[in-house]
Length: 452
Image (cartoon, rainbow, N blue to C red; front, side):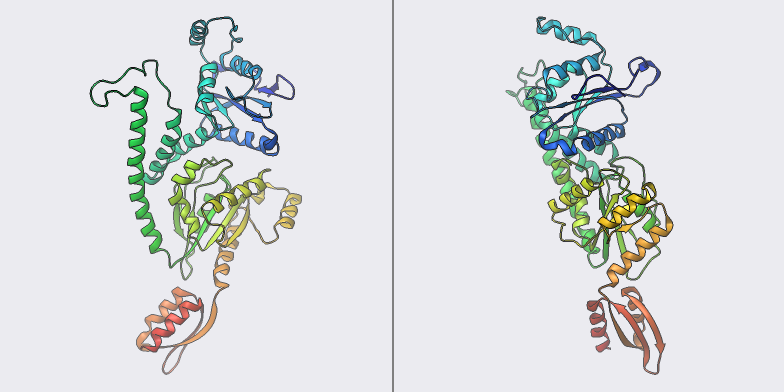
């Protein structure tokens, strides 16, 4: 990385322009402004944007940063930085101001952009987005647009695809722009509408259609959740790429999709804890959170996030090896509060302990003495998490001894499913069972025994 200027930096990969013919990989530049109120999170946020853009398949060849009291209304950065951005994206010096608009447009059309994307670590207004695209001659995405595009590429289930399309249309609607012939009025059906008005109406109609389809899918999901309501449920929540899916795979012995990418998992997966315990414990893997998660995505993925809201226990999975783990944990808590899941019992799981130093581990243990410290790739650690989950539920158990008549021996099998049977003795009048289970389950069995 080569720095071209001082405090307000332009950093580029050495020789990237000369090697353009050697690699088919698309290239991207990052653009960010350090504001007084975002100074502490500026660097972590920019590093995260770099990972997001790489997840989209781009090679990040440089970044432009500037310190300002506020974003420039026209194009985020000031005029000087904008000229540097234009020079990096086009490979040509800025066009002289005295040239006409037509001359500037014609010269830009003749220049092939050196990058395929400019990613901006802020939410852009439609006019800012349009001005940056005109200046650079290439595609521009703000942080929200990058995240939505990743979601679009990773969505697999019907519900996830509906959720992402809805979020994309909500994002795109205010950013529609008039085409060169857009002011001409349409003939026939919809006469009197410009092309822009017609496009906006199509988006509104499609959004209404998607909402209906999504509501139908979510009703089905609600029925499935209701059927599981009597079962014990654990939801894995946390920042994207914290290792939730790896832990899910270890806890449930399932083939849950795992990849070292941001937002590799968008669909909620529910599996039973394995080896099986009685009563059954269900584990769900949820969509990862991220700093500045777009509100439209939170709203669209409400059904998915309801898994956390309806869980008996939340496991906050944290990537302990990430320098920004504290802010990531805070983001997770903020999103959970937003969906009303703050009151659900929770435990912190410090993951990826194999990637931290002994000194860092000691500091983490001092800061979070009640957390569970693991590596999701270590079988013994995963087995300990499984035991800790079981002990969490068993903490509410009480011990009772029940005499089950031989004519009702099916209740003995049910007791094995409801809790932990400590002892069985065969006596003259039936089977004496010493069991640990939830008070309400024991009362229910006692009531049935009284009727036999």
